[in-house]
Image (tube, rainbow, N blue to C red; front, side):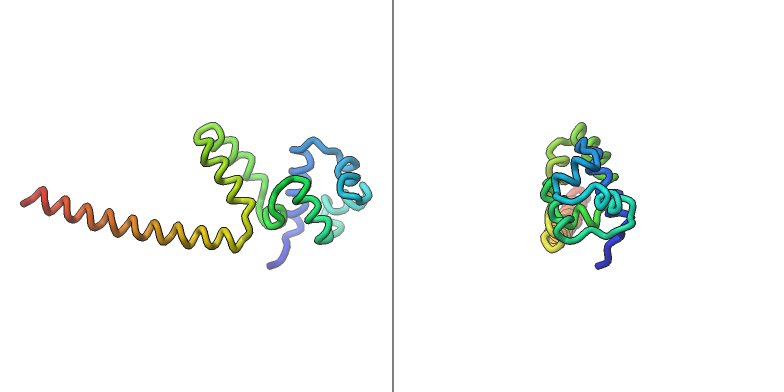
Length: 134
C-alpha cells in the first residue's frame, strides 16, 4: 500500500493545530528539528517510520489512522455523533484506532449479521403476510 504524502502532511498539520502545538514544540516532543518537521508538513521530505510512530503515539491514534485516513473528516463526524449519538462517536473513535486487519474482521462479522437479519425479516414478513390473508 503506497502512502499519499499530501494526505499524510495534511493529517500531521491538522493534528498539530488541533492539539495546540507550534511546529517548534511538536518537533522537540518527537526529537527532531523544526526545519525537518516543517519539511514533512510541506511534503518536501518523507517522515521515517520512527517519526510516524512517535506522532501516532503522541496523538494516541493508530499508525494506519495517521498515515492512511483523511482526518479532516473525523472532527466533523465526531462533532455530529458526539452531539447526536455519543456512544456512536466513541465507537467510531475506537474503530478508527484499530488495525486494518481488525477492521476487516469486524466488517466481515457485520456483513454476516446483516445477511442473517435480512433473511430473518424476509422470512418474517412472508409469514406475517400469509397469516393476515388466511
